[in-house]
Image (cartoon, rainbow, N blue to C red; front, side):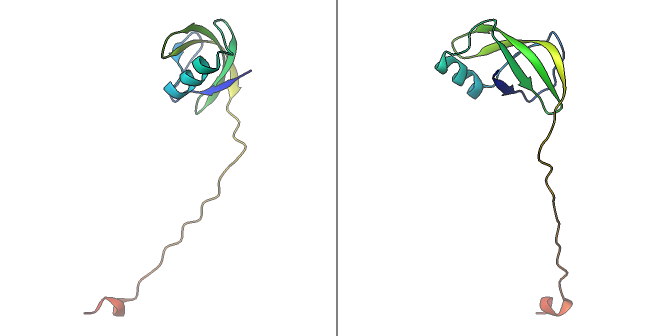
Length: 92
């Protein structure tokens, strides 16, 4: 099952469009057809969706059910380093 990312929040029975780049890929490859199931992922959750329309420039999908929270495999570690300047360096 193909997975696509949508930047905004969704809920069951919502109808949304895939991003322009994702739509271009689906239209160009001609592998997915209307009524094919796909997985849609947002920042918070994963959903099972179905393609309901393929137009010239966009792909429209309907959210069928929620698959659960998004699982992030990579949690970055960030270290912040700050230097303290010496007053003598700023005397002119």
